[in-house]
Amino acid sequence: MGIVQRQGLRNTVISYVGLGLGFVSTALVLPRILTPQQLGLTGTLSSIATLFAQVAAFGFASVGIRFFPYFRSREAGHHGFLPFLLAVPLLGFVVVAALYFLGEPLVLSLYETDAALLGSFYTWGAVLALFTLLYSLQDAYLKALFHTAFSSFVQDILLRVLIVSGALLLAGGYLSFRGYVLWFVGANGLLLLLLTGYVAAIGELHLRPTRQVLAVRPVRELLSVGAFTLLSSLSGTIIMYIDMLMVGAQVNLAAAGIYQVAFYISTALAIPARSLNKIAFPLLADYWKQQDLPRMADFYRRTTRLNTLVGCLLALGIGLNLDFIYSLMRADYAQGTTVVLLLLGSRLFDSITGVNGLIVVTSPRYRFDLIFNTCLAVLTVVLNAVLIPRLGLMGAAVAAVAAQVSINLARTWFVWHSYRMQPFTWRIPLILLIAATAGFLAWLVPAQASPLLTMLLRSTVLTAVYAGLVLATNAAPEATALLRQLWARVCR
Image (cartoon, rainbow, N blue to C red; front, side, top):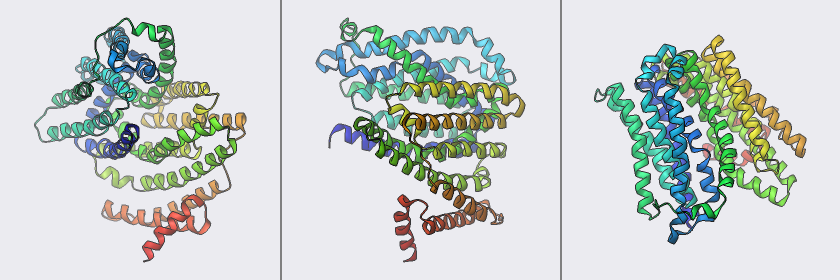
């Protein structure tokens, strides 16, 4: 088995374990130990650091992966590529850090309610940003070298274990909250040290700068691609983190913590789609290469059907059992119940509209993906600015739903208008009708004294009715064979 296959297999396992661990830690364990304000503070610091590092990097993480093959020469230290990869972002970090500290009064004025608390950790936000920046650059370097499993392990598994460990120490009285925040920052620093040690261990820590690096590819070209990549990646980061940042600024950090937990509960709905997208991306790229639009259209319809089928079941399973989920946390977090329902609706619509984004990004008109992402980022910021002061947490959720639905409709129309492909057949409304029927019958199950018992009863009714109706109507032929096999085993 080649290195790419080995690393790919390891990454797949690590990714699924990390997703599960991330959901359990962020949505269940941390909210049981940390107050909403404490969770909101660490989430805000992490979000600020991520945006800080993204701007400072100037897209060089992606540039490193894209252009490294031109520099590859282990005997020549890759012509000084690693020092160059680090130098430009570190220069950017100095510039952004200066703006960050000069803008401290402005930032703290936005977080007026919690300015004293955030201000006491403001400098640590810059330290966390530095760790995040250097980690992302070394991670990109390792990806270019086809060594990705170790960095995935420390990021997706080890970091989460360390964060949960710090929270347990806080709960046991071994750490103060300030100590926990420093533990949180230090855990990210440890990851950076481990990654640096790994790069050295595989003999690829070439830190001696050379002038050759300037002759392999034009610097202007690298900077130009970096700027384009920065715009694309920054819009994605804004979409991911701006809700919580604006809730913290316009309401308070406790509200940001509540929103963060609600957001992570809803991410369970995105896991199947993300897994499918990993398979869909290379397939779509191959279809474009072969100009096989009929097969692409068929794949578009089938994946949309599967996403709808799985997404409806998960959305109902989470929505019907929110009382049980929130019973595992501090009572304050239950204020996010309606937020979860709205975010589930947003993610479900994203699943139902299928792989339209991947079709755009792999198509000859891929630059429109940047336009869509930029529009989504701008629309999200504007809607949050308008709705959060009026509706608080609900405003952020409504903004997320409105922005996601609008952009997905635009992407779906764009794919249809450009390539005459759309993902909907008569089976989509049939699946929605089945989901509504199964969800209603499960909702009719009366609440029991134990939230756990209520969850088990409702989940059993939901799954049985949903699977039975899907089998009876053949609503999703792709899933029928699997369901029949499972049903046969249950009957035996």
